[in-house]
Length: 454
Image 1 (cartoon, rainbow, N blue to C red):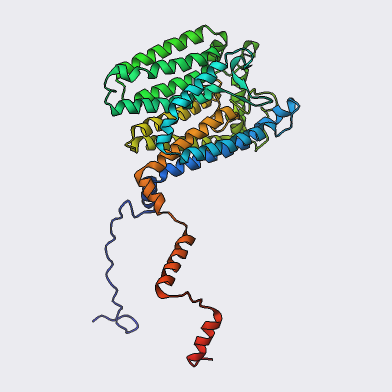
Image 2: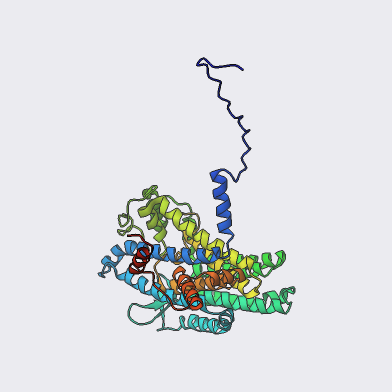
């Protein structure tokens, strides 16, 4: 037996085991991806995304409305927090509406479809009555409620079309009538064109585009054939082309796409200064409240172009955060619409998701100079109570639909406060073993002495 230099036998070392090949789930990145997928596939994921995303967008919107509207309020000889207080009041009322809508059963939502459509049509027709309708920025789409409070009935027309269209298509699907093109178009398309006509009487092209997007979203969810879909789209594009071609104001907005200079007579002033605001923000912005463009350079800084002020003060990080929240909200809406077996829920969730997503894309695209300025606010974010109230009610619809999923209902039923579970367990043990005895320090001390320990 060989020995070492010290005369001791050499130490026998255990043979090394061959290294096992790591699977993708063994490394940290693989485990993170697996956990993320599991969390993403949980029944309550859509519920939390809708609730959390909408609340975050609304709160961040309140902050930006306060920052972007101060200078405008002071220029109008109003308190600096004037627009913020009105928006905060609308957010509180909208929060109540969202809570009520999220707790309402689906049957009650369907029962509200026809009354809401009739009320929206009545108010939209009332706008055109002289002395009642109010004209703002060239569009007569407002009704004065007294003082500084006004409502825009066309915003409630979006919600009415979603509910009524979803109820109509669901009833026709139950009767197996959607396979016939006449039943798919009538009376959905004529009713939508009636709403579009009332909106266009006031000159609000932006709201008409959103309403058209909702109509096509409902038709797509109903499984409209390609020929039928293309035919209705062609008619809508032709009507839109005529309306744009016959209006110099709309033609000038179309000419400002991608503009880098204000142009003659400053026709592209708003579009160009929106780009200036985004460009000067950099990655992390100039700081909350430190915007330069809101000092009279950028019109509608707290309404249609609040996204530009967000980019100037919060930078690229802030704008990407807002876009990520809208993307999460849109994904959750699509998930609710895709996983339900209820036709009304599928159509209503798809209509609300189309509404919010299309309006966000049109607003952001106009600020970025990629689309013409349509004059639509950023949902849940821009100033305007008339737009905030129906949108928050629509978000409440999505929350109600997400809670109505059988798997989500079971998961919510299993969730109880830990404190409540502990108390229930203690009560159960006390009831089984007799009266409850408290293990106090005195009782523990006496027990120690009786055992002989001092």
